[in-house]
Image (tube, helix red, strand yellow):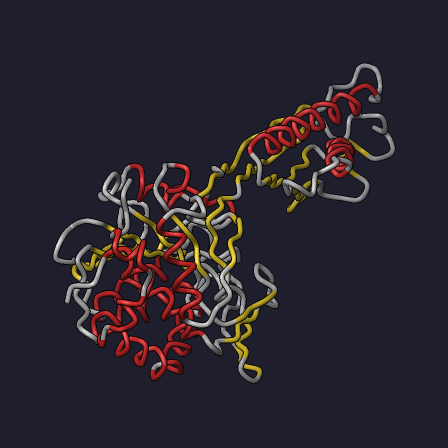
Amino acid sequence: MSTILPSVADQGIESLLDAAVIQQAFSYFDSHAEAITEEQIQINSIPAPPFGESERAEYLRQKFSASGLANPLLDDEGNCVALRRGTSDTPLLVISAHLDTVFPANTDLTPRRMGAKLFAPGIADDACGLVALIAVANALQACEIVTAGSILFVGTVGEEGEGNLRGVRHLFTTGEWAGHINAFISIDGAGLDRITNGALGSRRYRVEFRGPGGHSWSDFGTANPVHALARAVARLASYPAPANPRTTFNVGRIEGGHGVNAIPRQASMDIDLRSANADELLKLDAFFRRSVREAADEENVRRSSGTDPVAVVTEMIGERPGGETPADDPLVRLAWAATEAVGGKASLDRASTDSNLPISLGVPAITLGGGGTSANSHTPDEWYDPRNRAAALKRALLVILGVVGLEH
């Protein structure tokens, strides 16, 4: 699917940099740095737990409306969507960031400052991306930039955890714009240098072991779901995961039991499997499934005669397709040139982001950082430093206009 105006893709971005309106937009980012940070704080203070993003989505809708974007709305899946029309409907570029966090609804999300740094769960992932959407939309409107193609601004739901990319999946498969999107850019987290063109494939499972339960003394010998689960974890931990292609596994949550002297009736765990290579992911997946079966079988062999066996149920709770937007794709080349133009040191990487879905469908897609620096994502100690954020916003603007074209 053709996405980028050939003159921009092949000749670089010098013509964009020379345009007066681009320099005006750059000045906008510089002069509004503190206001952008304050907006990020406001966004992050609005809870957006898994499957509970509606309040933050509505806030983003209001901000898009204030930016002058036409008829922003929440779609059937809960994404916040706003179109900025160009002089043509094509190419149509999506610029997105995800609304959700990994943290439950009762988490204190209020950012606190320590020097230049902001500390709060989700402050970088992805309040940083959401505020970038607002900043870019405001700059386009303030500088009266007219584009040839059209830009669809989207705050997606379900990027994290068990959301299983439900927001971007809807956008590309059943939503109003399905089949019409020519290119996709996600702003996710901090940083300037990275260009994520590789989609890291993953599979996520919930495994539940079930047994009859009983008293720890009088019913000793009854099949124990926790023991079976522990055997499965030990087997998975022994897997010789290759460093190249990088392959990882993680048991992220374990639940079960209700007392120290009671044989539990249930034990469950959530597992995340990832690999940069599809064949390696399949190997890891097969090993994991075999480990679960063998763990249950071993526990049942050891149970007392006449007692009921432990049963196991394995449910896939998430699957993210892998793939890659090639390094020589015009979108990747454009992002590389834009990164270098604003003072970054461009590098390609692979990760699991909203871009996985369009990449799997053959739509050129990349994920970019929203500038600044951060650490400790997905933990209560997450922090973000907004210094030099403007460079990443300038990069995003150059890539956007490189795709949709600037009308003179």
